[in-house]
Length: 274
Image 1 (tube, rainbow, N blue to C red):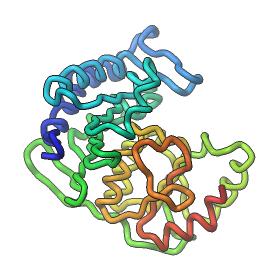
Image 2 (tube, one colour; image 1 turned 90 degrees about the vertical axis):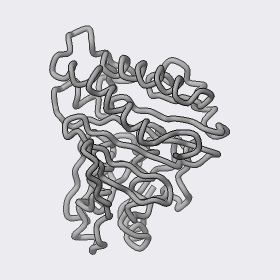
Image 3 (cartoon, helix red, strand yellow; image 1 turned 30 degrees about the horizontal axis):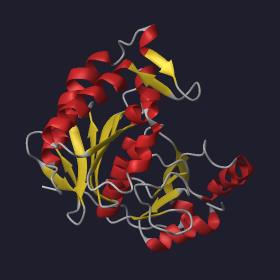
């Protein structure tokens, strides 16, 4: 039990929602079921909206009084974001992370939720509907891969390597225009750079020890709270570009995650020159 939120019950709610509202629509979306929000690649689908409605309705019954902050709810009522920093207890949800992939029929999307209490993230869950498993963490209890049959495996971040051997993911689309070319050039110093267009799977990949870094600039809480806590509980070092801690109310300042602080500092000095 975290605060007054049963994290196992929240994880089960994400799974049930995916089976009821998300998977039945995968590769079955009609023309009117997909709409652009801020730009052509920023999409919302009928699956996003119906999934969030289901999660919100059940969460409000299970944990009355908790602030519910969902991606689609904030799209409708932006002022919700301002309440997160001072909330005694909040549940933050991304009903379909990787909507661009989902709408394109690419099976790389996830359902994410985090629990925030007193201005800090205390639990995070990333459910993979296609693999039917969760990566999850509660603050101070490690990061775990859990399956519906009860199997659980502790996750560990990768061992540190030299900069020219680092493999990882960077989202560069929201970097400041005047710095983007420079940072993209700096990324030639690492071994491999990729991007899944799905933070859920990027965080799962890092927590599982398969890549050495993640880099983001736009920080919406539903995209990064769960994954950052999971990464930290797997042993990784996470901080904003200026070295400060990433907190639930932060919307900018960038985010860099690496296997340890020394690796983080190398990446910050050699690559992230914002």
